[in-house]
Structure formats: C-alpha cells, structure tokens
Length: 479
Ligand code: UD1
Ligand code: CA
Image (cartoon, rainbow, N blue to C red):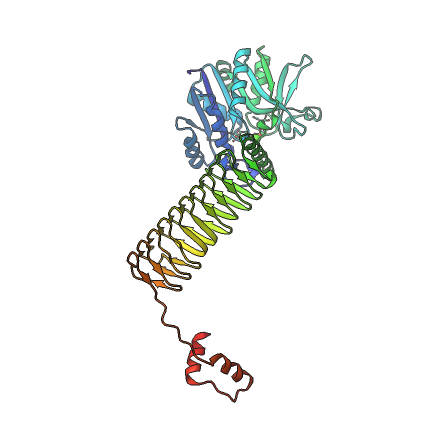
C-alpha cells in the first residue's frame, strides 16, 4: 500500500551513560539489538522511505541497520549536536513529503501496532506535530509535556532545562514524534541550541508550531513501557526483564508450559510449538526453534538450536545443534556447533559432541567426546569413548556404520571407518578400518600374576621380603 510516510530512526548518539565501547543502540535486549527491535517495529508501517541517522561508530551501526532494512537510506550526522541536528541530516537526505515519523533507536519494547495507531491518529487529526506520550511514576530523565490551562500541548521541556515545578509533570515525551513534512522542513533551520545541553532539540519544534498557531497534540499510550528508553545498563536490564516477561506471556497464551517464568529466558527470535514444556533455569537464545511436546530443562541453555518434537533435553548447554524428534539429551551434555542427532537418538551424561552426525536411534550414552564423526543409524557407542579427530595439525573424520556396537573406553584415531554392524572390544584403540560385521580388539592378552598383590602387601610391612624381578617390572608399569 503506497503511503506518504517517511520514518526517521535516530541512531547516531554514542550513549555516554552506557559507559561502553559498544554503541548504545547495538546493546541487546532479548537477543536482539535495541535498534533491531525498533526496525522490526517500523516494518509494520511499510513506510515509503526509511532513513536512519548514524554517527558514532557508523562503520558498525550502518551495516547492522542495513541487515534489518536493506532499503534504508543512511544519513550521516557528522557532529552530534542533538536530536534536531540528527533530523536535519535525515531530512536533507530524504526530502520527505506527507508525514514524517521520528523514532529513537533506544526504545526496544515499542510495537509496530502502536506506531501504526499513532501515525494514523496523527494523520486523521491533521496536526503539525503529534507526540507519543506516556504517564510515568518516575519521569526522571525524560522530556516533560507542558500543557496550557486548556490542556493543549505548549512545549516539551527536557529534564535538564525543566523548572522544579515542570519536573513534577509525569506526562513524558517518548521521543517518538510525528510531523507534517512541510512544516518540519520549514521549522528545522529555526531551531536554536540555547539550552542546558547546548544541543539542537527536536522537541523544540513543538514550541515553533505553537507560535505559528498550528495544532500540536500528545497521544498518551496506555502501555507506557513500550516508550521506555535504555540510557544506562540498569535500564537495559530492566527492559530486558520486561521484554522477557512479555515473550513468556505470549508463549504461555500460545500453549507453552513454563513452570517458572522467573528463571526462564526466551529471546525475541525464538519459536516454540504448542505443548512445549520449559522447566526452571532454561534459556532459549538466538533463533532457537522447539517442536511440539518437547521438554527442555531444568538448567539448560540452547542458542540457535533446532529441537525436534517430543525431544527431551536435560541440563544441557548447546549451540547450533539440531536434535531429532523424540531424541534425548543430557543430563550434563555439551552440544557444540554442527551437532546433529537423529530421531530417537541419545546423547547421554557427560558427552561432548562437535560437528558430528549421529543417526536415527543411534546412542552415545556416557562420558564421551564425539568430534568430526558420522555415526550410523542404530549404532551404539560404548561408555568413555574418544573420537580422536586432531593429529596436532589437521582434523579428520571418523565413520561408524549403521548398527555398529563399539566397546567401552575406545579411541578412534581419525581418519578411520568402522563398517556396518561391526563390533569393537573394550579398550580398543581403533587405528585401522574395521570391515562390516567384523570384531576389532587391540588390547594385548591379559597377564595374571598369581600371588603378586599378596607379596606386595607383605613387602610393604616387612622390607626384608623382596618382590621378584618379574613382580618389580609389573608393579612399576602398574603405577
Ligand atoms: C530524548 C528526548 C526526550 C525524550 C527521550 C525519550 C530530545 C531533545 N529529547 O532524550 O524528550 O523524553 O528522548 O527517550 O529529543 N541521537 C542522535 N543524534 C544526536 C543525539 C541523539 O541520533 O545528536 C539519537 C540517539 O542515538 C538516540 C536518540 O537520538 O537513539 C535519543 O537520544 P538520547 O540522547 O537518548 O535522548 P534523551 O536524552 O533520552
Ligand atoms: Ca534516550
């Protein structure tokens, strides 16, 4: 639907109050940058043109923004002289007509629907300026909405410029403003910077509109949290907690069981099917996807993982792993990137897996390291097995055939292949390929020295009884 809407996203400020080498708008809330959330919300408006103002660290911020909005026009604010200065460079880059909506880059809870309602209300009222406002218990730090005796908006006064009386006003400007483009373009050059910060405040456009006899309105949003910005780390954590609370409520409404919302964290890009159960201490991060009936937790962190329907993941740390339907993982498993477990497969206690495919119904139940391996369907790997994938220079792969059954405490020296249905004995160091259906053993025959243990004990008590030469040889290698 073509519209006359230009959206300007402000993202040039460094965010000194964050005390960070990372730009404020790149700080994450719910696994996504603050400006990323804002850009996702802006998408709902389908604006005719989108301009982002970048300044500090624009080499990072510019491409980051383009990742969310490929058609964005990036306008550079060379000198950070305030929100008014930022909008000046945006207007110069975009030459807007119709409606201009200015959105700050640090309000991650803002929803697309709220922006849509605000823009529609602004256009219907045919105002010069509309302010998305909110009533806060603690308005500290925000621009206050000053109204005249008729209740009409007179000005926005910034915290630092406000009188003690004005500071008591609890209606604040969210920093999200809508303008008639023609009026904005004419007003911007007239902004001054005679204020506490010595900056060009975009908010002063309100007074210019009033002086010109034009209409200004503030549209208070009921869900005021959406307009909250994060200026420091404490506010960032607060917004993160609020975003998480909102995500969890949404998933519970959609049929996900969350036993303890207070200790469960779900990032904004995670997708969960109905009847998933999340147990206490679960963190689902990045683009993790969980299928129906799967049970995750307790105490599990999964980042960018894909978990099949009906799978069970207990006390596990995983990243970029794909787990099949009805498979089981944990407790105490470490899934590294490239792990793929087939349907009904098992990765058991104290098992680390990296860049390996474990087939349908295959099992690695106990105490093992599986690196760069392919384990066929239905194979069973004995307890305490190491896939020795690294020869000190390069990584190599191990292939275990379908239905193979390997003994406990094996070492597979890659590259090596164990054929379909083959077996290996306990303690085997597999250096050579094992053909299908064969048994490989590498441990030597067992030597049993009758009476040796008894003689040692006696020698310890009475040094006069010396062990035999043969005994001495055995005991030194036993140590
Ligand atoms: C701003 C508003 C304030 C409002 C508050 C809401 C002004 C003067 N003040 O204050 O009324 O209540 O937001 O959160 O507009 N930016 C630039 N270039 C600059 C300065 C800032 O692009 O030169 C960007 C920042 O990156 C940020 C946004 O503008 O995304 C707001 O800047 P910030 O410094 O956070 O303004 P506040 O002091 O919070
Ligand atoms: Ca701010």
